Image (tube, rainbow, N blue to C red):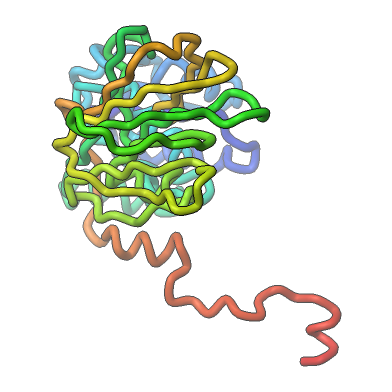
Length: 304
């Protein structure tokens, strides 16, 4: 078996856990390559990686059957950007905090590798979102996102106005700090923190979520992922920020329109046997747990 690995800088306390991943791959005689940026980090941290094989572009992933993402959800999204249209399956190992996309814990790497070798996993295809514009947004071939595409203001002084259209029909003008179009997968991310709903991963929907809207009656709206969403921005500062998952860029042309639609290819996520989206929701959001009176204080201790 031949796989690829990508990651970011990690805490010194996590070094033994990172080393354990490479030790287990070596013990199981799994051949692998490492992203060039992560390879440099590992060498600087004196992690024994057992290989000198590296990759940079998605074209260099041809022989890899799977990609391991070592980090949090941000690292996973960055890995999606590296995989791109090659649609290589990705398994996230969580070295971050919440980790909706990276549900494997480093302590479980041995059992995870065993399940991979025994093909005890399934592939979940997740819809992604794509953006087009007359102006250059990001490097050609990278204008896509797994979680969301967001437009937001660049300063703290004033809101921006975003005129939104669905399939050419006017939806609304949003006076807000910004607006995002999230996928069903992204419903557990930035959209959730802005008051958006949770959506099942395969529901074939997009969520249009305002960011701090001036009008309190403006709320998120769910639309079909077959929709074409067009956005035009008005800004006093004559610029705005466009972000796609872990990438962001300031745009200085407020006269251009951004068109958002479903990407032609999908992200493939590796789900090991025994893993379930609803289980992840309950675990990550603390559903079913009694969190009352968990904050300790002298006053509470004295009266209890």
